[in-house]
Amino acid sequence: MEDSERMAMQHSLFLAFPYDIHEMVVVYLAEYPVAISALAQTCRFFRSLLYFPADNHLWRNIFLGLYDDPRVAAAARLSPPTSNAGGAFLWDAEYKRRVWACNYFRKEQRLRSLQTLHRAFPVVDDPKTTLRAFETLLSLIHTAIPHDAIEGTAAVSPVDPTRPQPSLRELHSQLPTFPSATNSDTSKNLHAYSTVVNRGIPVDLVRALYTVNESFFEGDLQRAFLKYVAFSGMHAISPTPSSAHVQASDPNEPQTATVDRHPPLDVRDAAHLSMAATPRKITYNMDYPGPRRMFGPFRRLHPDPSPISSHFAVDWRHVAAMRQVVEEAIVAEYGEEAPIVKPDALRDGRWIAAPVAASSDDEHPSGDVSADRDWAGVAGIWRRLVTWYDYELLEALNDSDFDEQLMRMATDSEVHTPTIMRLRVVSYTHDDGSPEGFPTINFEGQSGIVGDDEEVIDHEERYMDGSVSLLGDDNIRWSMCTYQDATKQKRQWGSEGVQLGGVGSIAGVLGLWTGATHRPEDPIGSWWQWRVQ
Picture 1 (cartoon, rainbow, N blue to C red):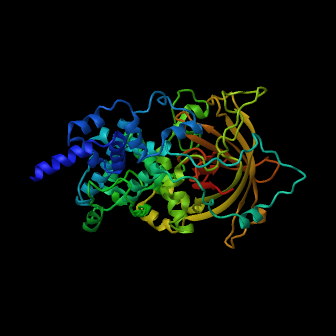
Picture 2: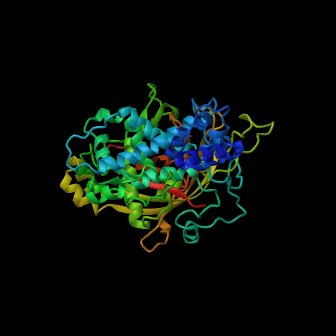
């Protein structure tokens, strides 16, 4: 028997198998998209099966073989639905879009690493294509399965006077530096996202996306890129022969292949990448905070000058700069394995109680979800790392317009101060433009500074209050003020921050601090806080 006849017979026998067997074979190939495409070219049967299916059953199973079920995240209702959340989920189109995006970055990582480091005036060849890739990559975070919900908590968390509260010193000694691991299922989405992050963004592409043109930061592509940096840091590939060899990859490599994490880019190298400004220049610019930005990392969406959260969106340029500065501090203080800097820390739900049904006597009913709930996971024990400069040095940097030589000298003078905070919810605000079911959360608490001896300094305890609300772009704003004593007569510091990743994420909140009265001469710095209990 000729080989061609033998192959034809084997092919006929395979087609004689039940449909379920054919489907199992195709689903098994989910992490090998090239193989699925090749299978569709073998005969009319598989071409029809894949490209003209009778329903979405097959493509749903292919999708779920590689990515999280988006219906799980939608059902959890941890964040308000977006304007484009309606309609049926297109399983085949979304599978192809995500595979394409991951392959786009893989191709860019390989091709650009082969180019010379000294290529002048790099460009993004097709901004729309690059934007689509970044938006698809970020969508993996927002459609990932959330962490398992924690035990339900009261809508308002009062202090029981008959029950003694542990001191901040005791809490600091008893609790871990970072939150303990959970029993939640591993997220397929975050595995795919981690693969791109761990490979790193090519330096040449980074240089192309950072430009001296200020208008650059107003475009959709730049915001998507800077949001990615804010979420995951600047892990850049230097185009050297060794990295080119490492990053070369087989197009048939499975989508779930594990990739070692590329180290974050040292912010001291930023000037050598022809960026508009180093991250520290943005982070420590005393002229930055003002009423037009709600004294934080925000940009105005609405012409109304009122400081209402829904009238503002995140300034991802500023948050991306702070991410690089504080991540370097986190790694210096706690090591590269700090869980809050990992991609999996970005997904929803680590600190969120499961929604509870609203009772008939609720003052502010919201469908089938209680309106008054700690939807952002505010109440609990938090740790924070604050970065700052001695005021004299900070002033010199600003007066010199962040002279490059002075900045290099100042890098080693940056101070990192850890603190611990206990927060409780005191009330909710519904009439400030908040989306239904997601009112502004008002809280209060105490904070303490951890000294060099790893003990909380007793006389440095401060009192604080603040709010958590949704911005006009559906990101979460944290606004806080600290006071010198419990009377709250003398304000000291103001903090404005943005939630990283999903609602109640392990990654926590990143922001800036400055004087509470917002005087022009007030100092400024950055911070990263994360919940531990």
